[in-house]
Length: 356
Image 1: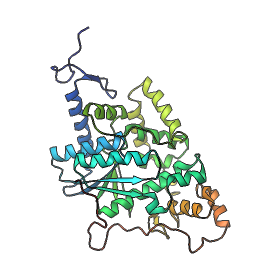
Image 2: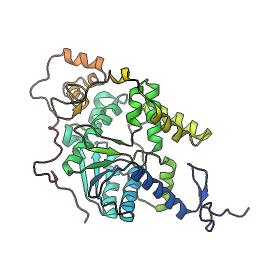
Image 3: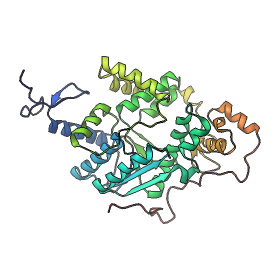
């Protein structure tokens, strides 16, 4: 059978079948439609303003590497007028993050973007290797997720940026919707499907890949020959998200549109007013100044548990009571530096590594 022509340009030979639509198209048309769909997502949601300083959450993986490349491409093509930075968080995972950061450093040179790396050790005094040695592999992702979110905001504040973009794709968001449903946490559905979020004291954060399938991101990286790190985190196989991911892959095999359908379902959920009324009022952490729904933010609670040798006591509210029963925290306990959006002059609070 002769090879099919591209369904879009009708000229070149079809090189791939889009997982998202089933269209058989050529490589150049795939690049164009993928980039155009991301551009449409950005413009329809009005994510940026000219002159914005934007930090790209860079891990060295496929999603963040493709995001950095596409953001640079679209910024130049459509003249967004953005100043782009790479922001990496070093969790301190030997044999994983140290290797992936080498990829980020190469991306810095390839894309000509300033890079800032902020480590857990620098910010919290603990690495993920040390945390796992204390808590084991059952709840380690809870620590990493909480610490990483705050570290991104703090790194962005050091860069004095207006916006953080992350490589969360359609698969990631659909998995989060499923996880919240399985946990009965319906109140979180509206927030987890939002393309852009911002707390009162945090930096605007968005997901330009909200409607981009993971498989298409991989195909884009492959055909563009992008330099990315493909090894999975050594502590993630036991994560609860893995169950939602496996279920989603089974759904996608039977119905490729299931990913987008789940996202739209999450967007369509309406929370009753009485449920909204039960949500805690947003405040700031008394200890570190970061946003929190309690007197102490989750990061400070987890760090206090680690420092007092009761690591798992910060995981749940019930376990927290056990920590409180041990009396007040010692005065010499390690704490997180107080959170500040920018320095008094409105300038970047820290120097960043420039491409050579």
